[in-house]
Length: 390
Image 1 (cartoon, helix red, strand yellow):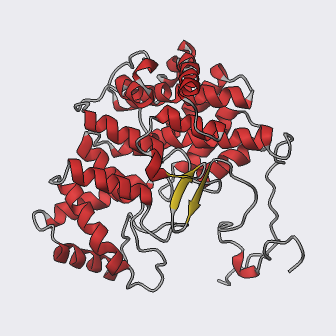
Image 2 (cartoon, rainbow, N blue to C red):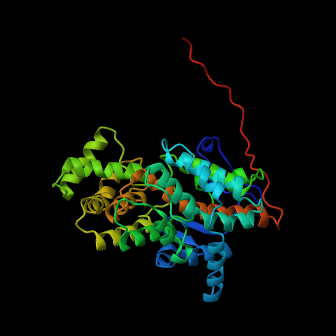
C-alpha cells in the first residue's frame, strides 16, 4: 500500500453503496460500532435529558455553552422562528394528499424562495428556528386538522412544535417528553448517512441551504432510511393483531421463525454500522417500559427485543441481530398519543435537518481552511451491459 493511502479499493467493493469508504470529516457526531452515537464526543445517553436548544448549541458551536451563552442563542433562534406569510400561504396551497415527505421537501423549496439569505451560516440558524412552524403547518394541512396557530417559541423548541400541531388526540406531558427525546436523538448520525450525504452533495454545487435540505429529505423519505419507522410500526401492529392476547416469548419466537421460513422480512433489527443494540433504542425501551408497560405495542416490542436477536443470530447472513431505534419509536409514539405513522418520517426530518444544516455549514465555509469542499464527483468505471439473447 502506498504511503498516505488509507486502503485500496478492490473490484468486490464496487457497487456496494460506498459503504465504509471515508471521503471527509464530520465535526458534529460519530457512530461507533460498539459505543453507538456521540455528539461532539458525548454519548447520546448523556444528552437525552438536555433541552433541545442546549444540544443544538453543542452541535453548532462544537462545545457546550454556558448558561448565558445558551440563553442568548435561544433568543437568537426565537427571533428567527416566524416564517413569512408568503411561505405559510404557499405551503397551505400544496396538495393535501400524496406522501407527506414529498410535500416536506416542497415546503423547504418554498421556504427557500421567501426565507433564504443565500448565506449558509445565516440560513442554518434560520431553518433550524423555522422548522417547527414549517412541519406543524404541513402536518395540519395534510391531515386536515385546520389552521396552524402562530408560533410561541418562548414555550421551548418542541413544546412550540406541539403547541402548533392541531392534534385530535390529547397532548400529554408524556407525549412532549417522547417528542423531545426523539428530536434530540435524531439530530445527527455521522457524516455518511444517506440524507446527510445527499444534502452535502447537493450543497457542494453551491445550491443554497433550503434546496440542499429539500434534496436530503427526498433521500430520507425512502423505506430504507427515514421511512423505516413506518414499516416497523406496521410490522408490530401485525404481530399484535395476529397473536392478540398471546404475546409470550414462545408465541412470538414461533411467529418470527414462521416469517423467516416464508422469506418475509423482520423489521427493526440490524444496522449498517452498529454491532450492538442501538443506544438510542435503549433510551426509548427504558422510557416505554416505565411509562406504558401494559400497552400491547410496548409489551410486544419488549419481548421482540429479547427473543429477536436469538432467532436472527441463527441466520448466517445477519451480522447484527440487535434492535435499532426504529424497533421502538413507532410503538412509543403511538402509546404516547401520536398514532400517525404517515408523519413519523416528518418528525425524523424535523430533527435530522438540524444536523445536516450544521454539517453543510462546515463543508461550505469551514472545510479546507475556509475554501469549502469541492463539488462531489466520484469516478465510475465504464462497463458494458450484457444483453440476454431472446
